[in-house]
Image 1: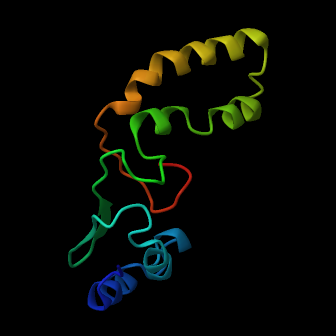
Image 2: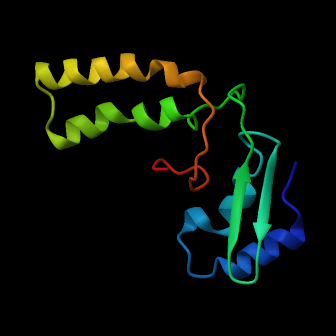
Length: 116
């Protein structure tokens, strides 16, 4: 499945000067990679790409659980929070957040971006 050429052209016009991750080439490369239920909303001065996810997609990372805990180990290390007490606190957080793995989630993110 590919994004409609007219919509992609409109996106490209709007995306002039935007970061590469928001550009038309990136959008075309990433289109429907996560789910075929992808769509564009285009206006005269704004655009949005969205996906409808239900948690059964082979590529994860968009649910509340994933967004809250994804990459947390790197963030802890970068912040210098690596003591036993810090790691134990985050282990408890992971345990508490596990129930969110099945929760409905609305996420606004840049396509294929690491930081929603």
